[in-house]
Length: 245
Image 1 (spheres, rainbow, N blue to C red):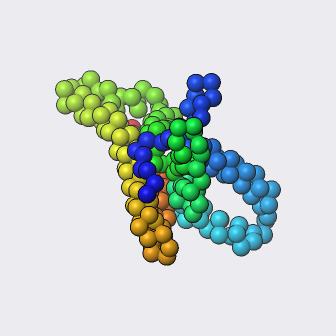
Image 2: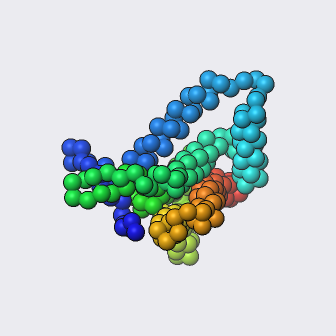
Image 3: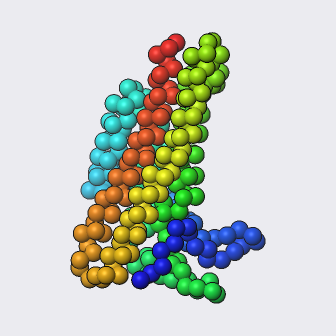
């Protein structure tokens, strides 16, 4: 059975920078999405075809969900690129990470044979980076929407001891959100990879197919949950303050 490693394996080193198999797949996902964005942008038509119609239906569905969460179609259109990018990138990373053949490609590091590619979200560095981006950007959006001092005043409120204590709890909750987002995504994707590795080693033919489809579903759901939590954070940071004005 293939060795299961909790951390991403190093493939090679470039001027002191370690390139891991999860980083390599992250770069591959980025390149694929950038390439597809250019291709799709050149093929957009006023009268949409079948694929364009499906894509537009998906966009309208996400915009409708964001509108109901944010309470404003203007806000939904403004923050759509951020939420959609998070969803598409994480979902593509999750799906490519369990794509048949990806895990079977190996690379000889000189000391051992390691998988050439690994699902980015099964590396805690990837999920932690996305969680930090999600929390930081949602707070920056809150500052832009209501003003930097009003937003910071939510966390540092010296009006009275109770308000100060509540502000500290709010600040702690932001750090807790980083931990929650990163470990939730990492745990689900890593557990799925471990499950598939064990199932394929025990029954390498048609029996693993239901588990493979299950992991495809879980990968899409985790991307959706991550993007929706980011959306709710944006809604709280932009709407809650406005209600106090």
